[in-house]
Length: 389
Image (cartoon, rainbow, N blue to C red; front, side, top):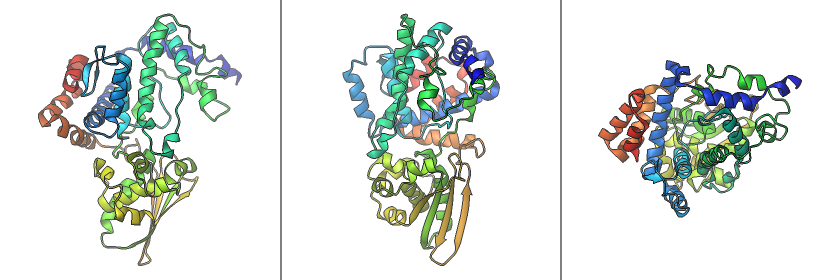
């Protein structure tokens, strides 16, 4: 503990952020950035064009006077205030639950003097919040969480630049982020700040192959394959094993998970996602949203049991299939598709991108946008924004 207290995490982060330069990025890191950007553009363009919450969130932002600036919101124009453009673009990127996912979490900041970054971190601490209570009724809070984070980042930076004093040691302090928002009593601060500038944890971020909670992805992939193999065979029972934390989120046998009536509940239901994949395949994109009342899905969901199994780690799962003819099949799914141990290929990333963008922008513009991202070093941000504003 004494050693931890000597490590000034906030100061080290702030100094790194203020001095970070593109020269630190290796070709591998640059390639990942482009891949993540392409994926982000795909899911954001699709959500901005047509999703159930988009127009309502935009209407609320407009009512706050957001359209008096010069920042771009994807497909909605280039005259937004930056904090509201940030809110919209981040919310849109998360709206379909089809965006990238990184289990341990991440930290982001802009390029400012180190002291200003420290103040911004300190001010942002007071906005560090979030809740999974949206699972109670499938609310849209979840889609707004990253939007709130980006909006509040702009506000915190603006306050810091104006000289507003932020809390010192917001990460490691007695009432800081690590103590307030993690269950551990001991924190490995040395590993948190080790190798800044050479270790890029974000490249472990997984791209999502399916627009649903990550905890269901292994079941979707395997369920889709086994369902195709089992055409015509009667299923007696499907048993899903999940870690205790994941079971709470997607496996509780409660009405809104067993037979979800809205999109968010369906995305957070191991029952619905497994049944849907088994019956209709795993590569159906957002088509699940049109099948919430599907009787065949309801019937198969009733045959699914989700159990807690603490031998299952991370986003892994296990599936036992019992057929009516007596055959039983067990499948261990330690890593869902998209994790470094089970990677999502570049071809599939591009296929996902085109499936989302081409129906909105057309084939030619979708290709232009992809080519720009692939040659990002030769283009400006303005050129990118012109294609998506």
